[in-house]
Image (cartoon, rainbow, N blue to C red; front, side):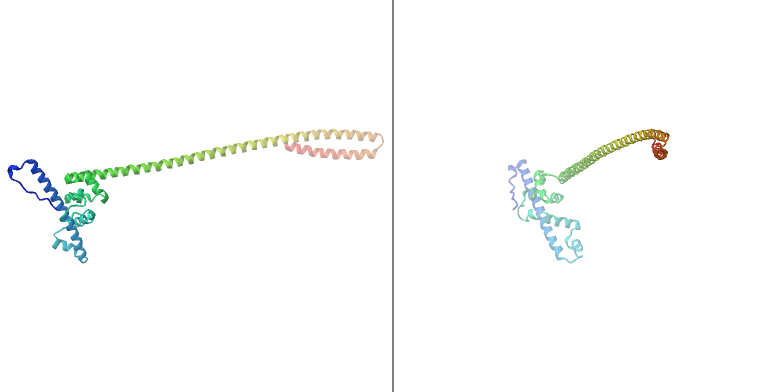
Length: 265
């Protein structure tokens, strides 16, 4: 219930007493205004539920004497402060919210429900002007946005850093793969070079052997021809003819070897 203030004789009053009375009356008036606002909102919701579709606006204008926006504010005050309602003739469940003027309670609707009471207590909202309260709410919102922006930027930086690290890892893996491929190519080229050198050496050795055989065979052919001549001198004409045929075949074979050798040069 509201306090009752008995006004004493003027001779007994001083500025401190008057100031206290003013503050007490102001606080009581604030509680009553917010309490009436909640009760008005309660009844507006009740009336709206009773009316048919399309009747709400005309009823507000003709019977309720409220604009649509004012009615919405009253109903929202009732809905949002339902758990801490200021009863029409009682105290608030929350002292911080119960002492607020209607305009302050309306401004605090910009905050999440779970933050309103602590915000009002922390900033002594009942002692602030509406402009001061709006300024604090703006500063709170700006601080939250700045914090959110900072968090988003930090998250973006973390994401960019992770992407850069992933790119760096990919680049390092690619570099290692390239080095390994270069090493394999180098080894293959070296092996190919060694194989070519070995083939060249083998070919050179074969050519040298064939040159030796061509020369050696020519020498043997001469020796056989000399042998055949001696047999002819001894009257062995048949032996001579057979050996000379062999010498001819030998020389033909040696000529083929010489042709192959020339083609290999």
